Structures are given as structure tokens and as C-alpha cells.
Length: 352
Picture 1: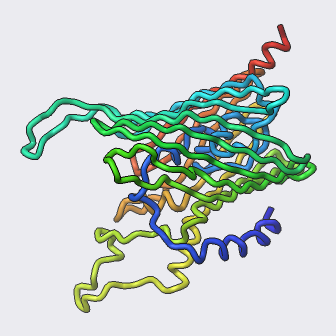
Picture 2 (picture 1 turned 30 degrees about the horizontal axis):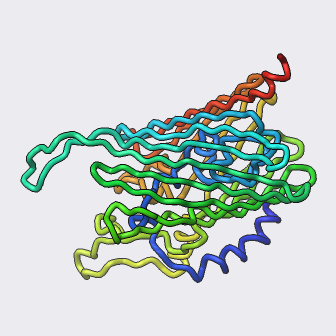
Picture 3 (picture 1 turned 30 degrees about the vertical axis):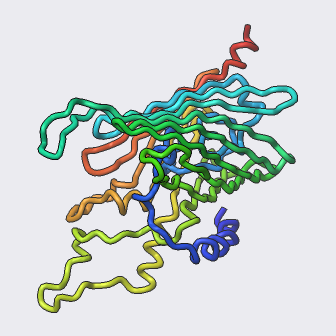
């Protein structure tokens, strides 16, 4: 895997080095980029290039939708800090002439809020939630190459404000002959806000370009995953005046600046998500991942903890049922819990 990555890294640097931008605050429908699959969350929380017929992964990488997923169902639930919960329900079916498809309903519930006017007088409780209806399609072009796409109808309700939009994901994947190495190129959330919250004020969607790699070792049931995120924007940093590193020197009044090499390394690492998955006796999987960008965004100043950005989880396969759980660390004392259940109804039909 290391040798193959060495060939790809220079291309990534050339691709992303000329693009500038900020990571957040300027897009609508941010929930589209949230990790829903427990397996994906445990491996760092980004798209995966894992071609083993896992329906829950196709919400982020539709190029792996195939006939082996026919009559499979996947349900996922995420419990996040602040009373927020989100997830999806998905089902896949293959039509003899049209090909393999998946349908999914993705949602996020932000909870209940107490409304206040400008004078802090209560105006009543309100809720906020968003939904996306996803229709996915996948096709294997050759034994080594596959493509796929997700079409999304999006609805957002934030108090009295409503918005409707559309988006698509497009992906292409390569899988080696021995199934040990996989690489995917994925474009997420290319679309438009058709009916904005405020008339005449459309907001761009959270478009993202990614490259995902995975390699399974030949003699050990261990898989390594690596994802290069936000390739359409190089600069993922932001200025935080509360960061101790941005405080002026009490004597000289000057702010210490990073060297050019330090800035490059900081930005480059923010684009990389790493993960590892160990399979035990073909039925149990143990996973761990690290997301440097998440660590930088969620770390607490003055704390030496490195838990922010870490994730871990496990999977259990029992006949037609696959159960996955993941735990990701946001800030000390605050975690997200992911639970995904997948059912292969085709196995049930065979037994009947």
C-alpha cells in the first residue's frame, strides 16, 4: 500500500495545492457530509474504498452498489452531544435490465429550542430538522472498474424557514484482481439550493472531492484505510483569536507565525484520515481511526489530550445480520455513538 500511495501523493499535492478556501460557515445542508455508518465512523469518519458488499458504505461511495447487495437493508442511528440525533434507512434491489439500485432516507433532528425575540421574551418552542431522499445506482464496467452515483432530494426546516435542494454524488473505483487493494475517486454533493430559506439568497452546498484507498494484507486479516479529503480546497485552517498560539508576545507585541514548512505540514495532515480494521474468526471486526482535521477543530486549549479526532468500534456478523458500533471522541467528556444494523434478506429467502 505504501508504494502505491507514493505514486498518488504527488498528484494530490498538485491537484489541491492551487486551490484555496475555507472549510465551513459558507454552505447549507451541512448534514449531508455527516458520517452515518458506524463502520465508516470507526475508521475515521470519511468515505471508504472498501468493496465487500456493505450497503451502509454506499451512501458515501455509490460505486460499490452491486448485485450482491440485492434485498439488503441497512439502518443507522447516531447519538450526538446536545440532544442531536441523525441516521438513515437504506434498501438495495437489482433489476434485471436497469441494474443495481439503492434507496435511502437520511435525516437529522436538531431537537427542540426555545424561541426569543430581541427583548428576550419567549416566543414559543420550535424544532429544526433536515432530510435527504437518496437514490443510488452502481455498475461494474469491468472486473476491475466500477462507477456509481447518488441523486438527492433535500428538504430543510429550521424554525419558520424552509429550503429545498438537489445534489448528486459521483464515484469511480478500481479493485485489484486479488481484491486486496481498492482506490476510489468521489465527488460529494454537487448541487444547488432550488428554494432558499430567504428568497433570492441561495447558499452553496458542501461540495467535496475525495480519494479513498484501502489495502488488505495477504497473510494477516488486517485492512488499512486512508482517505484524502477536501481536495477541492487546500487551506483548511482558520484564525482563532482565542488560540494561545495567536496571542501577541507580552513584551514585543508580536504574534509568532508558523514557518512555511510548518504551515504546509499542518494543512497537509488536515486532508488525511487513517483507519485500520482487524477481522477475527471471520465474524468479529475491531476498528480504529484518526482524523487530524477533527482533532485540530475540536481540541481544547490548555489540554494535552489527543483523544479528539480518535474513533474506534467493532462489528459482529451472525449469518444474515451485521451489527456495527462506533464511538468517536469530540472533546473530553463528549462522544458520538453510532449504531448500524444491516440485514441480508436474500440469505433468508435462500433458507426458506
